[in-house]
Figure 1 (cartoon, rainbow, N blue to C red):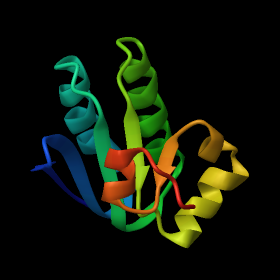
Figure 2 (figure 1 turned 45 degrees about the horizontal axis):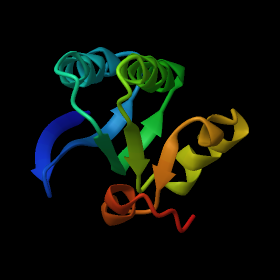
Figure 3 (figure 1 turned 30 degrees about the horizontal axis):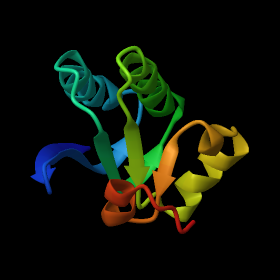
Figure 4 (figure 1 turned 60 degrees about the horizontal axis):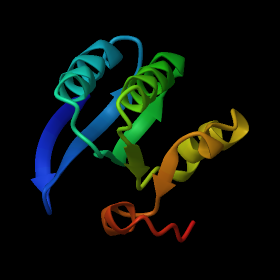
Length: 113
């Protein structure tokens, strides 16, 4: 898994590629918690290059969302591949997370999914 943090139109975007699993999720958690500790909001996560996510990856995002809610922050996810989106839907997490089709929808808070 590779992780990058970029600025896009004044927002912090976490770009993730590869597998988010029990081996890689601790590194993702470190990056996410660093932004949360700085009370950055929103934090936007680009899933377009994520090929797999397991329960530890999901738990990382749930923990991040919980941390952000403590200060009124927002965690937005976008471009989730179909197979991974099925996991979010099956577990009803699609009702918990803000999920968008692309980054501009996330910035404008307009869902077209």
